[in-house]
Length: 161
Image 1: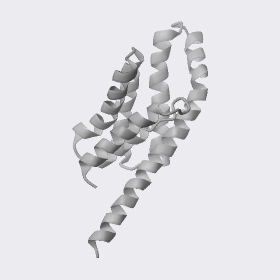
Image 2 (image 1 turned 90 degrees about the horizontal axis):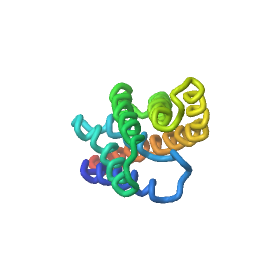
Image 3 (image 1 turned 60 degrees about the vertical axis):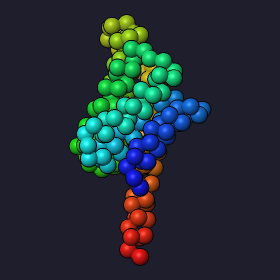
């Protein structure tokens, strides 16, 4: 499969899955960030694909201060993908935790009292979203991983005929 089709497909996947009804935080962006970090050789593409996916949709729904923290979390997730060099349970769970910590730190700074109590309230309120984050990250990350592996195996079979 040509790289440009993969890039376009990932961006379209990210946008479409945000347009259709879905549980909060059940999204493919972590999977796309890990997939991009592992499968694209150019550093630019590793970061471009997940960030442009977010940016395009944010032009549709609007921007807020939280976007800074969301984008930062996916930059860190690309680095996680670079480190692990494979989509596996550990890289997905660490990515989910990173997103939870960074994004909710932003929520705390923007919308909660700047106290220990406010901090605890913020993260406690985010726990139901964290469950959806983990489930979505696992689902989409493994879908992307195994879809690519199957595509590559089919290509190898076709070329060996």
